[in-house]
Length: 460
Ligand code: URA
Image (cartoon, rainbow, N blue to C red):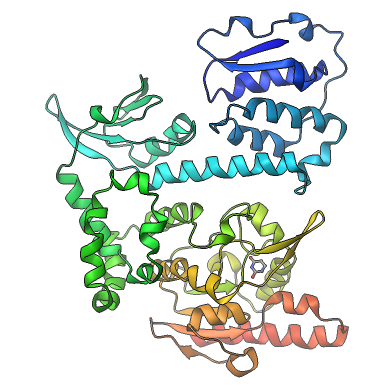
């Protein structure tokens, strides 16, 4: 048995270096014991593995390294061995990493997803409290992650709160930022963190102003916010109050929410996108790889909405990058619309599919899934305030208009939207990809381009 001792729970480099050498020596997974400790003295129980007699070096797919970087942060003690097992498998079968039906690949992908979600939760739910510290102001937060994500998240907080002096206390370690240097400290307990203070009022005001009653339909605000974080969040004290007067304030709030971000629309959009990464508003998040949020300038005048991400979008986390996206890009260029100047999103932000062998076949989102995702579309609209929203296909039209319409009945004309701006309905680009008859494709493509031109023209 060879024992590999890693320096910390999130010691990716230690794992990578050891795993590379062991795999090069073709050491079977069953002969390795992975452990975490303070003293990496017994990096290999048997140093022979590093001898030059080892077979030739091998190349590791980039996707595996990306996966490993996330999985290492998972709290499952098996993670080092599982990753090593896949690494050894990749020597013979480098394409195995792309095989989404492979149980080990799936298990590791799932672990990576949980880690990403935990990273997101820390960003979204951590709350600082203001304390006086030797005459200076310091912000202190308590957070209990599920996985070993604190170090991996440090950069985010340094960038986001660069001008503040802050400490983040967790049961695993603490982080301290003094405006210039990030220092690590020992584990903390909840008792080390301060309780409520004036900054809570600020959070409460903020949350009251961005609170959207649409969330109440399914009690989603409470469902979405994991219970274990409630106690850290001053705004939860407001929920009852907000529920009581919700409907009446709906319209006014839309404007207030936009104003409340103080002109920092890009920052608010980023926060929204980050929040969406952990979305569990419907079951579609479970099989999907990740949330595919909208993209484009936040001051775009036009918003284009598709149905839902496809297989390639699900992997790339970007809308319209697969075959339908290429068709969309071509038609946009022909219509004289610069894609980089518009905002592109989807009615549903997770890929819905049915597994068929190794393939994932697109499945149409149903009414419940479309409604569950409406929250994100509303928030995107709220920030971007598009003058023209173009719905690509029936699902997008349903999301935009809040009711089922036929494409033939609604297409090709400006429709006044209740929440402001104009709407425009046209076909989905994948409709063109599915047409069997070549002449029909040409006709429908030309009509699609005309629709896009019409929408752009209606803006002038
Ligand atoms: N189809 C869509 O509706 N959206 C995408 O992002 C890709 C394909």
